Image 1: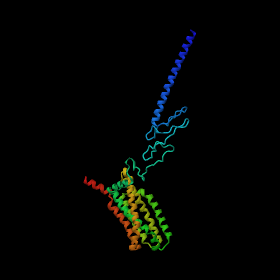
Image 2 (image 1 turned 60 degrees about the vertical axis):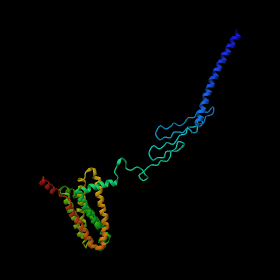
Image 3 (image 1 turned 60 degrees about the horizontal axis):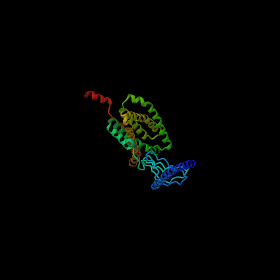
Length: 330
């Protein structure tokens, strides 16, 4: 009986051993199947005892590189390889998934290398100047001021170009006298700037520009026909007062008569015309000197400044007369 009981226990132990062996075989089968699957996909199968490798997490953001299936399996304890992040902005070089290490150099687009133009449909500087010229031409008071100002600055720049020949040949003096004339002009400009506000509040722009340009031209006639330094110094000095008043009155009327939405563009177009006139005057002065001589050229240009005042009176509208005409026609 004891022998039979011992044999039964031995049989039960053998059964448990067989079940354990079956479980071990099933696990081996699963491991073999997994190894075959990894081999079919091209992945390296880790050897027995090696830790299962981990891979870098694929990027969740657009444009980030995801490691390919053919990537090498890192050894146990070795950091998983990271991949260069692809550029998310337009124009950047996107590195391939097999690249590791530093990110690829960015190619930032600019206006010079084919990049986008103005954003949000913003107009270019050429369009802004063109719009300013359009408003300037279609507004009578602004158009009249621009034409008179162009003539004034053309003659003024030409006389400035002939200032040194006048001092050397006309007065027979050195360049020191040129400095005296310019200093006297600057001081009188300060006086004109101080009284400009009161004159602008009391008189119309047409009146200020007409009399101001004419007064500057008259001072130039006296100055450039002088044969002595004191006379030329006083005449040039007096020309700065009406000159400052006309410039301040022009800037004031330009701001008042221009809509706020295009004020910057109109002001740019207006000052651009003055600058072009000054450049033209610097060319006209020496040419007129070569054709007519010094004294005739100086007198002609001085009378051109007087003509700028007459032109302003003809082109600018008289606000009092305009109001009377409207009252009679209404």
